[in-house]
Length: 150
Image (cartoon, rainbow, N blue to C red):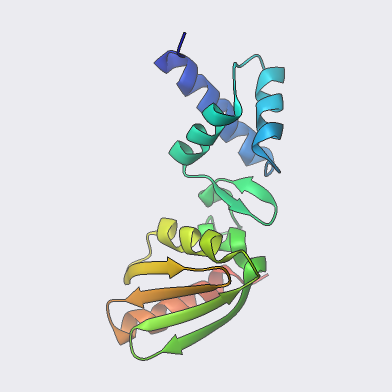
């Protein structure tokens, strides 16, 4: 029998509380934690819940974007994955990341909802960011640097 809306809401609230306390290393660890709290959960239901909650996978595990850092910025949660930021022309940025981390960084940037970002494209260790102007490009560099300061 599929879960009811109340069961889903309750499970998602529990996931939110767990992620506020600390990042979850794996979806399986979240399933175990939820079961210990009395919730019915599978890896696929947890995966859907994480997507619905907007969780991102960082170097520390699954986190909520607003729990990423002290300023509540999703980008702060992936700060350790950034290697360099290079302007390319007047409205493009190239961000180098740790190997395999570009998609996580791109997703954090997308979810930041910062003004001026038109879109991102992420490969394995590189993220291209299009901004709507040269001014937005400069502001974005400053915001990323601020959000990723230790």
